[in-house]
Amino acid sequence: MHSARKKPRTLLARVLAILAALLVAALAGVALAYPSLAATTCPGCYGLAELEDSVYTEDGLSEAQQARVKQTIAEARTRITAFYGSQTSTPTLLVCVTEGCYERIGGGKERGIAVLNRAVMLSPRGLDPVIASHEMSHVELHTRLTSGAEIPQWFDEGLAVVVSDDPRYLAPKTTEDRCLASPSGPLPATLDEWLSTASKDANTYAKSACQVSRWLHANGDRTGLLSLIEHLNTGAPFASLVSPA
Image (tube, rainbow, N blue to C red; front, side, top):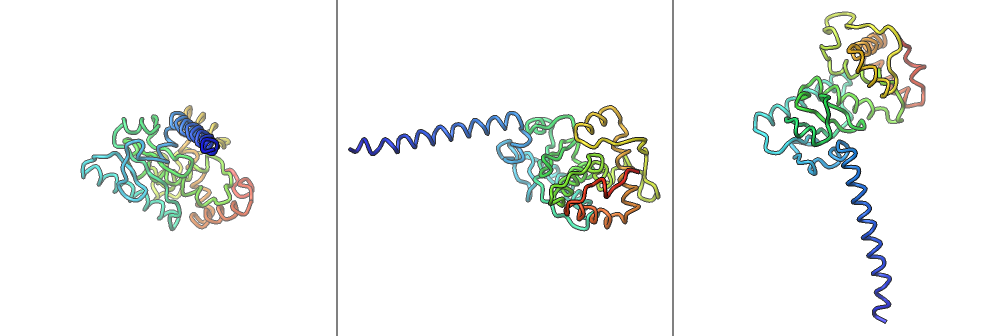
């Protein structure tokens, strides 16, 4: 009788063990296929330590290196707040000061990248307020788009250039028209189109920033952007709110 009673429990234990093994295998598969996603979910699993709230970097950094990371993030947050009036997003920030670290968390040749519009990874080449605020701008915009509204990639990227005040793609703020390269046709709307176009045309960022900066200037800058976000969140299509320049 005792052994008969144990059988259901034994079977349940085996089922649970199998399910646990399958879960571990699935998580391992995700980590292998999408290390950046896994790293932003579990920074400690990739050897990163929390430097300050939501900021993770390599363990064992010198005081000077830690100070540089903190200053970069602080200045990037200031740019987000200065543009939007406040910062509503709290992205997880993974900051690498060595290339080995960046490769380990799934980074490539880019200086930085926004992961699923909820986290940001910065390479040693992206340890700069311009690059950091550019990637953080993507997260901030999509955090404010509470409806999950779709926007064309050129607007997302162009806005990030404006928010970060990137001198590579925009003239100084003292100029009335900040464009360095005017768009001469449709700009890439999808991520795939963007990646393809930007890899062939070095002015893609500048053209997008030009179009966005002109739209902002004509629509009250921050006021116009916040109004756009509000209308998008109520279901209005982007094309009905923003006309190409």
